Length: 136
Image (cartoon, rainbow, N blue to C red; front, side, top):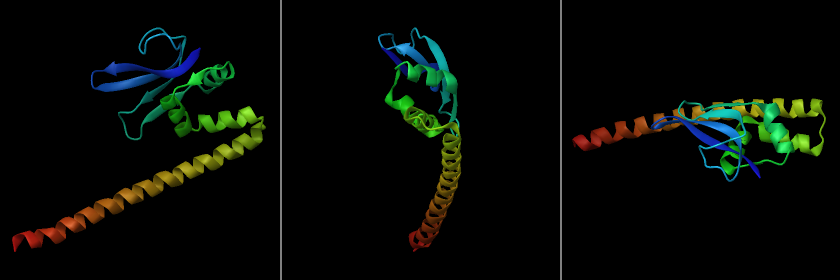
């Protein structure tokens, strides 16, 4: 059985992963059939790049993604597109759904940055109120 899984490359303590189609019996960093993408968790936001057509090719042939790879596909929107393609949805509708999903992702990123900024402000305020108490 073919699995879509991660293959570790990169330096020590600085991993970069390739998403590969490999036989499930081969070792993690061993032999693989085809490299279909990459994942770099070391930068913020993490970098994901995939060969969409090759991933869909392997999924059509019955390849199973591992849990981690499925999560990466969900974060990039590939899994949503794949589920719509499996249902037989036409391309124009898929395009509309993907545009709405992209806009929702932008809104989510904006909310997250605002939430982080509020959290930093609360910590600063708490540190300022505790400083005078410590002097007394």
